[in-house]
Amino acid sequence: MASQEQTNLADKQVFTTGEAAEICKVSQQTIIRCFDSGRIQGFRVPGSRFRRIPRDEMIRFMSSNSIPTDVLTGGKKRILIVDDDPDIIELLQEVLGHDERFDTQCATTGYDAGVQTESFRPDLIILDYMLPDINGNIMCRTVRQNQRLSHTKIIIVSGLINQNQVDELLQEGADDFLQKPFRIEELLQRIAVLLQI
Image (spheres, rainbow, N blue to C red):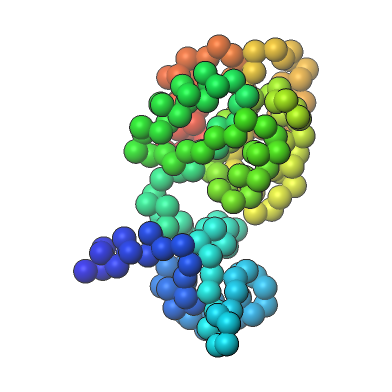
């Protein structure tokens, strides 16, 4: 019965304070205090005092407070693939999308990547260094300045880059660098190390 209840919670998009408390394994009063103080964002049901918390906000709150998100994510690691090469996107979607350990999304510009990073809250970003609108340095800096993404790992992939640029990217917050063309096995190995899976 409990596992059925957990499945139902995992599928929900909006949570009551009681459900949030159950997921976070804290008292409902704690969730209400966090909500009222602004530590959890949400909305009130019009004409009532009931509070509601969207799924993305639950994941953000849990991640930033080191509360395991397995109940909501099914234990899958979220990976955002950012590349303007449709062949790379297709290849990585094919490989990672069929791996039970991962939940993937894709972006082809820095702007789209920024929007999706906020909503998807990836555990790992596979980031092409040269995007049409920005380069990897700016993306790394933006992610590292966002405290809600402090857990997010970044692997830069690029073919046109020198060692000085690689060093600069690592200083800006990238966790790893992989030269294009790369072997899928090597990428999967690097992902496994960074995500400790």
